[in-house]
Amino acid sequence: MNDGHQSLEPIAWIRTPFRDKFTVPRQSGLVNQAKGIIQFCPDFADADRLQDFRAHSHYWLIWGLHLHQHTDKSLAVRPPRLGGNQKTNVFTTRSPFRPNNLGLSAVKLDTIDSAHQQIHVMGVDMVDNTPIYDIKPYLPYADSINSATSTWANSAPVRCFDVRYRETARQQLTQYEQQHAVPVMPLVSELLAHDARPAYHGKTAGKTAGRSAEKIADKATPASPRIYYSQIYTLAIAWQVEGDTLTVLSATELSAVELSTAKLSATELATNQSEIKKPINPS
Image 1 (cartoon, rainbow, N blue to C red):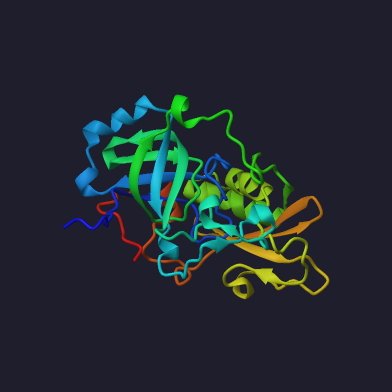
Image 2 (image 1 turned 135 degrees about the vertical axis):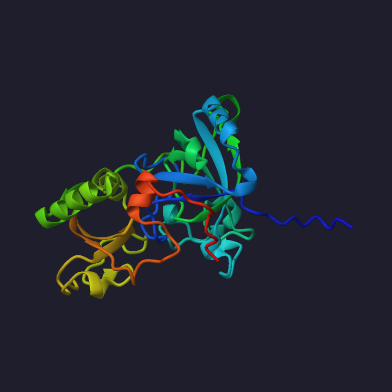
């Protein structure tokens, strides 16, 4: 007897520059430099049919919020657009804490790699190694609703900061780009120009945020702005905000111990020099 339940199996996995949730774009399409590689599972990998994706410029991805699958859920959530303090119904938000752990993103088709049975997309908003459950074309006549309105999210987020780099950070990023053939600085600049800080942090000073902060950079003093750490590719990006200026302090490559062995290196993610035989299940 069919009780209405349905189990989902991934059709693909997506590789992205984001190793954890912090600093992932809050919506798809906000950061064009945020690029992903969709690796199809064997049962859905048909190299002869990949060229069909050229029929459309954009696609909807239905994907799994796998990092939240064991997190307690609530009908009431606090979206960042309401300051992070006001509660509202989860179904009226884009909160990742959802009953069925499903995400929906519109991405732009970039390139097709038939040899590796992959498609490359732009404007992603998910962490590395996220399961993809379905892909559908974005149809302008049906999916773009000019009369649509939203009470508290009616306009796109604006760039908040002038992103600058300390010379040490610039040198580190330049060296990393040359070594791995991946344009990190354009991604970092576009990503951090939008305020990536938690809504409740605001201009709080004197603390650090992010994973392994003490191991990667000096702690901020009580009188200094808070230092944040974003993991992008295999880098720990340290940055802080003062007024309208965001300064990238350093870009330190993480050690092998700090990196998950279940994820691709930056070179593999950026250039696909080594063929991926089978997508890796994050669980």
